[in-house]
Amino acid sequence: MQEYTVVFAPSAEQDLEKIVVWLNDKAPEKVAEWIKTLKADIITLQSMPERCPYAPENGLWGDEELRQLLFQQYPSQYRVIFTIHKDTVRILNIRHSARRYLHEE
View (cartoon, rainbow, N blue to C red):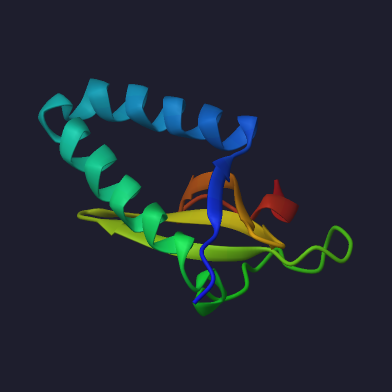
């Protein structure tokens, strides 16, 4: 089975920072658990990232496939939007599922 390297685009790193700041303000006791769970879910993309469905934004910006990993951490759900290129999974965005799709903003 092929192993993929997972990398974060600067936009995904910024998304993560904003979410952590927001969580730290609202529920500081949950931040460490949230980050641990998110990282564990993202690490699963090292094998078989194709198992994740296409993101609603797929096909809107050229030929690169956009996929999404749905991350559920009660009470919220997030979409981890990523691409696969050769042996690399590139995380592009981490978005709360209640936010509009990228092409609607």
